[in-house]
Length: 155
Length: 205
Image (cartoon, rainbow over all chains, first blue to last red):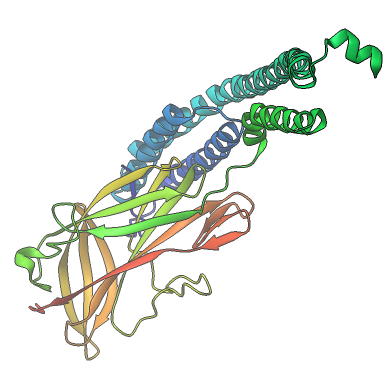
């Protein structure tokens, strides 16, 4: 669960407040970057459910860092913002692997499907041809009352 | 039937079998087309669409804790980064416009963010209470409320304490605009979703 208070009360400005705010802003950017990266991996066909869970944890850190900023605990806010950035970076690193693997799996799956379909088509054509020859012979022998050789010769 | 008739039947059967063999390949190369939508709802204390207020009375007193559950369901077709923006407004303030995809102009009192997978449902607890009301310039003004144990400063005029509401708007992060937007967009389709729950305040402090 992720909760953010967006209208913080005003506290007396301190030296490290701006630093904490800047770090929180960086954390937010890192979450957005991680999300966009996950989206690309998902579009490539990768399973991103575990990474989404990780990103939701990062969102939770981010929310808490906002709360600490609201309460004037700037050091704590900065620490939590750093944790957010770390979690987002972990996702970005894992995401590249997922994307590459997903693209490979997708390629192999399509290739397998193509080979399977072509094999079935070849089998249908091969056995169809055999069946047709047999059937033709049967038809000519039984329906016309001639031996196949005689019919071929006549025709 | 002549041999030519049999030949036509045989070729037709072969064609049907060949097309059937290619169906999985055709399906795999077609894009997934589902009706995209997002669901946002507010549920009562027990996670059902009932018991929204203490003792089922929508006349709330200052300090009364009200427990709701926010329900979100993503059926857009892909993972989405969402924000539920919660606004406290009176009866005269503008609600969001679903036709123009325009959000309420009231300030955001509280925001919940989440990454939601496609087809994921998420339930989020939302407990709130009105903490402080003051009389100012001929109006009662809601000055403070708590949401999920957090104190939030606000400024909402309420003439007689009736017809106050929480507006919940769903905002989605859009890659191109690099920001949250009060609408969802997927391929050619667009939409937006919001919800509101009314209540009255009986004791004005």
